[in-house]
Amino acid sequence: RAFYSKTFRVQYVDQEVDLQDACLFRFERNAKVRSDSCYLALELLFAEYNSTDYAMRKEYPSQEDFEMVSLKWLTINKFKAGHGSGFYPSTFDDSHFCLLDVMIHF
Image 1 (spheres, rainbow, N blue to C red):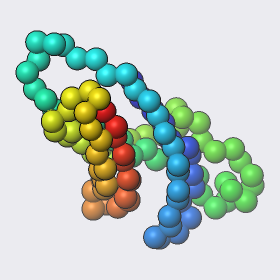
Image 2: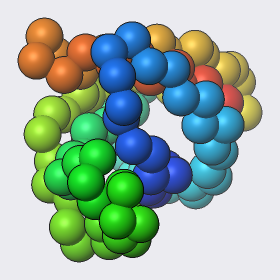
Image 3: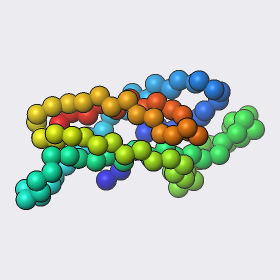
Image 4: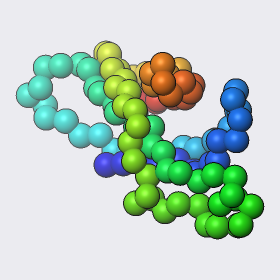
């Protein structure tokens, strides 16, 4: 399953965008699996949309126009449904510095 946040235009360095997005996933796993860890992939997507496009009031790129430029894996340890929550501030890499605050309830 996948969830896509709102699209926003990066205009300058140190720009902050408050997404306030939430999503709900149902997670099922095999009862025979002994691991108490769960993994979540966070993908940073990019599509070109420059100031000329903005000035000409072009539409934002569609979902198909975006490409993944970075990937971050979160490991949720001691995962047991109904028994916790966690705050995971996540960054991607040195080339794509951004901070994504992830709150997970399980």
